[in-house]
Image (cartoon, rainbow, N blue to C red):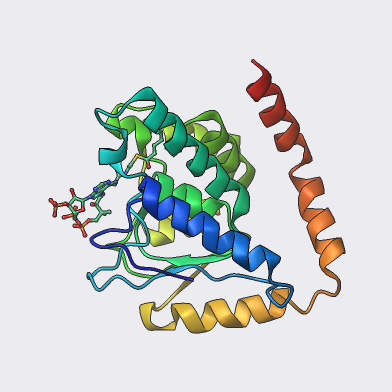
Length: 210
Ligand SMILES: CCCCCCC/C=C/C(=O)SCCNC(=O)CCNC(=O)[C@H](O)C(C)(C)COP(=O)(O)OP(=O)(O)OC[C@H]1O[C@@H](n2cnc3c(N)ncnc32)[C@H](O)[C@@H]1OP(=O)(O)O
């Protein structure tokens, strides 16, 4: 899936709604077993996604914000595989929801949950998704300081899985997905994934009760 919403693929209500509809269609397509999401913006260096559209959250009615927030959560529930350039905040969340993250090895790119730098709080489920990926201590430091990591640092803490030269990102992503798809039987993979997420799903359920 190619994201192309200039200038920076910011996640607006319209963009997220279209993304969720496209994902729903792919989920219903029995021939589709995986998804590589990438940015085809023409800017250099490339942005994967600038995160939530800041203008979507400013000066809007509570109803509009509610609708926006619902679609952000829906997006978080659906994702699978990714490759990328710069990914701050919601852009980082988008890639954290994927099974495997391949980042272009260009020090001008950064990734991380930088919300505190903007004076906002990374929501509970952003934080928990980060903890599940890089562990508690790395998350503690990253979130409190609102750190944006360059590719080599992101690889070191496990925020991304692989760095590749910029012109090879898509080829390597395709090869990686081919390897993942050799695992037989969708059901065992999906069940394993659900088991890994069981505690988090329960926490989220409790959180929604309060
Ligand atoms: C309802 C409750 C919500 C609670 C939310 C809590 C969680 C929040 C999550 C978030 O995702 S908040 C968003 C955080 N995002 C950022 O901090 C990213 C900010 N942007 C950048 O760092 C850079 O723009 C970039 C992505 C690295 C790209 O840099 P580049 O130099 O290539 O482009 P710029 O000249 O900076 O930007 C071009 C253009 O795009 C506009 N823009 C950038 N980011 C956003 C954004 N997130 N939303 C809306 N618009 C954005 C930027 O203003 C420029 O616009 P113009 O000036 O050209 O009009």
